[in-house]
Image 1 (cartoon, helix red, strand yellow):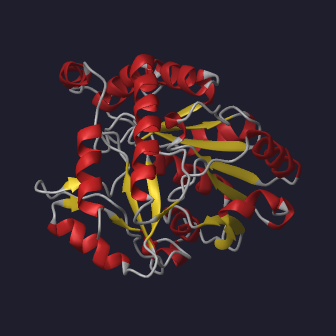
Image 2 (cartoon, rainbow, N blue to C red):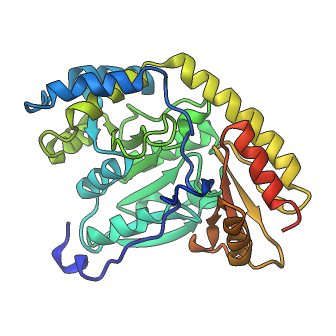
Length: 336
């Protein structure tokens, strides 16, 4: 991290509400967790009286099976954002240009700036067309947040090849990939992948995730990782959740079905962006997005003001939750 840059970098806004009286559609987390998670967490508390095994063999094996890579390529982290920080710490030096997609997750630019790098913003649907030779690193969010569209797998791998040939680190954020049946970029030479348990398994407060890197990328990530990067409960629960294939399959089907139903219903009031993620981006047209957000809040529902994302000035974002909860959102947004 570049000391000269730290004081110049602020925080970025995020979704999520801690108001118990609001039904939260502003954060894109699964409203359900795998059955048995609570007992695994409770059992892990006894083991938390001593330091965890810093090799995390159980967690690494489960993560590797889940992402389709080798266990030795997995680097445990306290959430996906920590994995992104590791990647930028190993691949970005002061003054380096980094290709950042927009509109997309605001933390990419913040993390690059903390390393002293210079974000170069590129429309997210044009990012695979940039010349990697012009950048020390490039970032892809797949599926992209907040738009929800995913990259063509062949085009993404071809871009990874060009990045590798240019000695440009490709950072792929797969926070929402688990909601799709698309294959991961984990284990691809020259690529640092960031994964999170936050979204798919509905555990944002657990702070569990992992980075994946092959070859020298993986070696660098492993070197930078701090010791005991996961608490024992996070590692135990994380390993357990990553093995719940039936839960993942059921979640994917529910999200696919509900997302389609919601998109059809919301199309009467908004322009709805096609999505492969557990959320929908809505264009409010001539209506003030802040007013749409506030009217929903008064009705007991929290939705995300998406104008905090670069280039969006008339948008809100809504998560896909359980069917009865989605019914409530549709009722609230009807006629706003």
